Length: 167
Image 1 (spheres, rainbow, N blue to C red):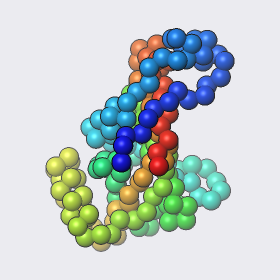
Image 2: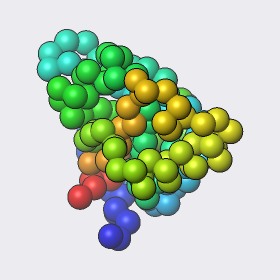
Image 3: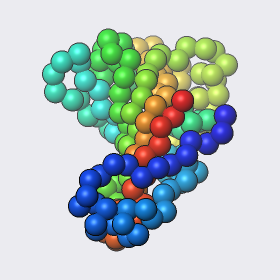
């Protein structure tokens, strides 16, 4: 699969007026998003019930082959939300280096994948997480849409605001 192509999101006339080159400046490459997702230590996962307020929670996770993986107890609110909706949003902690992903979730249970993820979690966090706690469910999150920008200094936001649509 080829990398998604970034485009300038529709932000309206004010954005086009303030943005460098009238909103036609450079956009970020998908590799920028990958780098930020691979190197982040903590992430926010946001789930919602079919109706009701969003439920944001911080998690540790790994980004492998453009899929984000994280675990949570099967009884947690986010696990129950994802079981009902199959959707979530994931974003980095920072408002200066921004990656926001929206996509689909499912429980990951293939033994070879879980073994690979166990090694990835241990390498990143120096902890054994996969298979360690019986009530933990490993979720895969496949982004369908992504937003990214460099937010500091402020002029970078206008120059780098990028949207990606993924297959």
